[in-house]
Amino acid sequence: MNQGLKICLCFSFFLYVGAAYGHSCPALMHQIDAAMESTEIASSDKIMVNALRYFGEHQHKNGAHSDSVETLNVALMILKNKSGYEAKSGSNNTTDTYNADK
Image 1 (cartoon, rainbow, N blue to C red):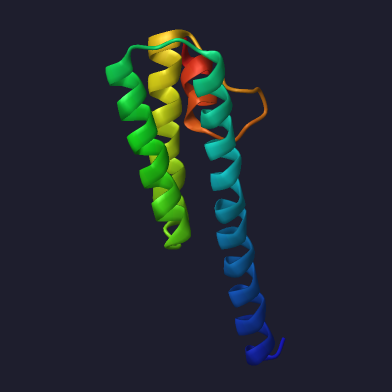
Image 2 (cartoon, rainbow, N blue to C red):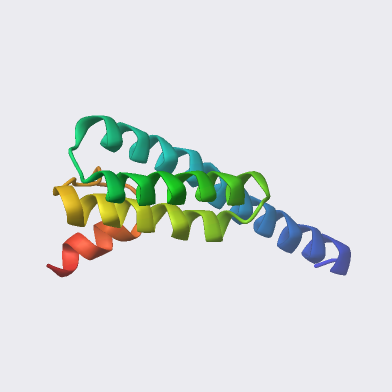
């Protein structure tokens, strides 16, 4: 196979993977927003979740998608631990892993 074609294919793959991370951030932000409307948690926890959510959005806008996903998953974990909120099944986040371990 031509060396240039191999390089193009590898580069395309990494762009695709980066886009996948980038598209999961808005879904996680939406999940947090929906959970905040439907759950009752202490105001101090609400402040922490909101701060993490907006920090995750900032990371997403600056292209740090893996960091954004990690930050947003921490916010979802706090919601789950403090309110019993369950993340949607089939989503790609650490709360599903957390729930499977229990």
